[in-house]
Amino acid sequence: MTDSRYARAGVDLAQADDAKARIGRLVAGTATPLTLGAVGAFGGMVRVPAGMREPVLVMSTDGVGTKVLLAQQSGRYDTVGEDLVNHSVNDILVHGATPLAFMDYIAGHRLPVEMIAAVVEGIARGCRAHGMVLAGGETAQMPGLYAESTFDLAGTIIGVVEAEAAIHGEAITPGDVLVGYASTGLHTNGYTLARHVLLEEMGLALDATLPGGDEPVIDALLAVHRSYVGAIRPVLDRIHGLAHITGGGIAGNLVRVLPEAAEAVIDPASWEWPPIFGAIMTGGVVSLAEMRDVFNLGVGMIAAVPAAEVDAVRQAAAHAGVPTWVIGEITRGTRGVRFAD
Image (cartoon, rainbow, N blue to C red):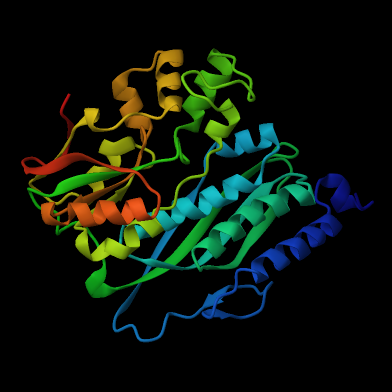
């Protein structure tokens, strides 16, 4: 560490410059034909694609919650960055938007350069996978607010969609079929409860085999949040509405896209939970109602689809390697979500 008053107080400018240089190389590797401006400028710039008649920008900001604590415990830092990107891409996908640019924010205290670089490598990998530029971001060293070698992670995405093609959910109608897309586990929600049950109450080691499963606990917990772009974009024009199942579970997110007088009826027997959810429910004696309120339970995205389009929608997902199930339907009734237990 550099011998200066600022460094002794907790902020090493020389180390920060090293991190910026590493990040700059990663950012440069995500450039697209729409990229403008220089790496390291005060603001990131990106063009709106040419030829759009009435482009609408779609923006979202989110984080990965306490999943970062598992990255810190295990020393595996590159997956949470990819989680962040995929979560954000899915959030604007539900409106039919194509991602254009991403910006990240990492805040912590005395973060080693290798740690920061690993986080940003995951972010850059997620951006490259979606043809999206990592247009900039911020790495803030904040002693006094964070413990040493701890950090938080957040990001902002900007996408674009033609106004006439934007999906709002108003097209959802009674008779539509609900198609559920498989998650890769918890994604980026419910980690406070999951960590408490699995690691504290059950006392499982990170390298222990997950009860009811065949993989280490840490692999199940750090499984990367799935992106649904490849499974859904080819058939967006066949879909009436989409819900990204994040915090609040199926009911808390699906209701956000339902029009008035539309009730979503979910058949809970139509898919099987991944083992991690059963382990949490059994090991922590968590009620079914709370499991449904907190976790996605194996369904990371739900599409409301006209009955005649269900086969095409599911085939597109299968082609992208994403399992799907018919998990319910839209009926006429009070706006809300009901499990048909």
